[in-house]
Structures are given as C-alpha cells and as structure tokens.
Image (cartoon, rainbow, N blue to C red; front, side):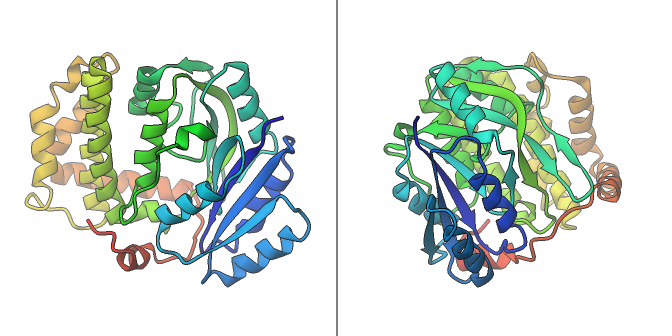
Length: 341
C-alpha cells in the first residue's frame, strides 16, 4: 500500500480546521500522513492542530513564518515522505473515501494524476461541478478539459499526484495564482491523467476568501494568459479552444470591474479591445455556443447595459447562496507579501 502525503495549508481558519482534519484522519485509506503547514500567527488553529495531533501520529505539524502561500506549499512538499501527494485547503473538507478513490483510480489506470469531482459548498446548499463520465486523458486531453472547465480546473486540491512529478517543480514566491501555474506544469508532465466522476471534495465558498479580491482576478488573468501560451505551444490543435477560453476570461474581468465598482471604458479598455478583436476567432472552436458569443458582444459594445445585468445576476445569486466568512483581510496579506497587480 503506497503512502499518501496530504498537504494542508492552515491560515486563519480556526472555525473550520477541525472539520477539515477529522475528515482526513477518518479516511478509509489508512497509509497517509497529514502535513499541516500552519501560520504561526494563527494560534487558535495551532491549538486545534496540536490537540488532534496528540490523538493521531500521522499528523505532522509545520509552523510557518507566513512568507506567502507559495513558500508554505513548497515547505509542505519538501516535508512530504509519501509516494503520492495530495493537497487540501484548511477551510475545506473531504469525503472519507476521497484518498482511496484517488489511489484506486491512479493505480488501476497506471496514471500519473487522478482527479475527482467537487462540490461548491455553501451554508445552505452544495452544488456538484462536473459531468458523470470517466475520462482517461493524455496531455492535450487534459488541457482541453482545463479550457472547457466542465469537469476540473487548475486547482491543486481535487487531484492526487505521483511524487516524482514534483521533481524540479516549485511554487513561485511573490505571485498570486501560483497554484494554477504549478498545476499546469504537473498536468503537462503527466503521461496519463484519469478523471473519476465522484464528488468527494467540499470547496467552501467564502465571500472574503483570497479568490474573491480584485488583485486575485488580475493575477488570475495573467496566469491564464501564460498558461494558454504553453498550451498552444504543446497542443496547437487547441488554438481555437484557447481563444474561446480567453474570451470568457476577459468578459469575466469586465464583470469583476463592475462588481468592484471600478469599471470605466478607460480602466477596462484592454479587456474590451481584446474581446472585439478575438471574439470571432472563438467561433471556430468546436465547443463554442451562441450564448457566450452574445455575452461577449454585449460586453464589448454595450458595457454599461452589460454591467447592470451583471450586478442583477450577482445579487440573485447571493440571494440564493449563503456564503461563509473567513474573517481574513487577504488584500492586506497580499500587500505584506509584496503581491501586486
């Protein structure tokens, strides 16, 4: 039975970390180590981790100087002793069968990476985010899945990786969205990736998470552009799928500007110009659908009307989805770590 190292980043999540760690301690797959990287300033979470570690010697506690998420992840990878590596965020939790399912999928298909489905987890509901079809993918197949975003994306935490994939790979410091860049690199090194259509990861949705601030949206777009350049270089047949993906991303940036009340034609000129220039190239994608083209044209040529629609839909979503709150000022943390737009 191969050993699995589960790296858990814990920072200001004391309300949720017990649920997270218990879901890992109770895994049906027993040969695991839980590498808990804990911010030294998060004394409440540290106390909970120390309490649980006394009852389970598979928990390894790593106090962290909080130099940034990237260095925390690098620290966790360096400390991991397992044959396989998984990641779980400290405010999420998982089904007790998750690791067993990932290991079985990886080993039965002789794959380098296995992936499971996720729930978007709200206070009042959970919503599955994948289709019910098993997939066996080569590199370009994985990249196409990323561009479509129907089953999985560039998250670290819904996947299990063979340890050797991390040889020569590390998380960049001083940047946001470092997980997307590393996940792309790992998927591109994987000769075979298997997607298992079982929903086993609970991705907690908080309005004040680090993914919900404007600087992260800007960083995400920069990372996505870099990733798309790599995809075209490795899989030129996905050129039009890249065009479609980036059109969605640029439309999303305009929507983000409206949500953060910073939209103007001058502020968002780069995004609007890109959409106008590239929208018809996206029509050549075999996965294009009429709705996204209409949305892109509406955004590019009638942005104020599109902004009103965006705000209305966002409010409707918030009215039906009750979010959690982490209580963390991520803008301040990013500033302290030197992460800028």
